[in-house]
Image 1: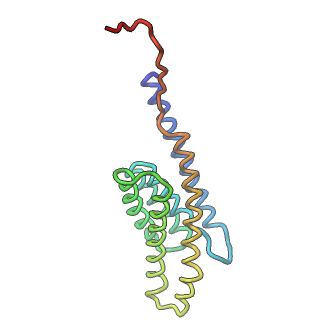
Image 2 (image 1 turned 30 degrees about the vertical axis):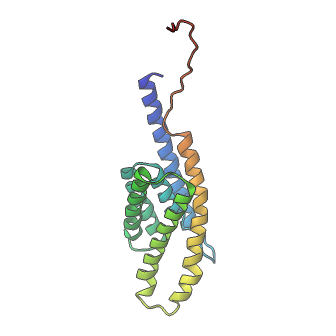
Image 3 (image 1 turned 90 degrees about the horizontal axis):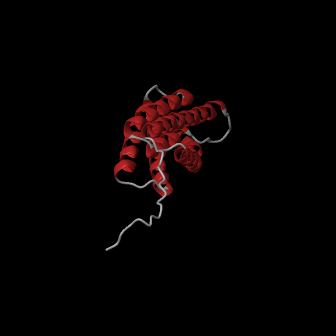
Length: 188
């Protein structure tokens, strides 16, 4: 395959992959901000950032995690930058873990996703409920935060599989060679 053609296809695949992942992030934001339900809803932007961090370069993961965090701040009404800082640093750590130590496997994703969800939920509960000593903060934790963590991790599996399909379909271009049998080989 021509080297310039391969580079052109890889650039095209990179742009398409990034556009699809940004559309996935936008869908997650719209889901969080527009669905009104009585119970706990999954916070889809967290597994979206973790999936991206597991499959892309560290610098790109930091930017994507920061944008996901800012969108989560906007959707949940928290202080601007609260979730952005959390998702930015966890995306960097997850990207480096997958880049140097861990394999891309669903079990590795699940425990890292749950760790990020747990960190974000505990900090959210601590700074917005526990420190202000609301009377019903324990009930809020049991009835909102715990089901939210479980639902978010379950829907993270769907996002992991979806980002896997996107990355596989629009990943790097591989070259295939067909070896031809030649009778011109002289054996001594």
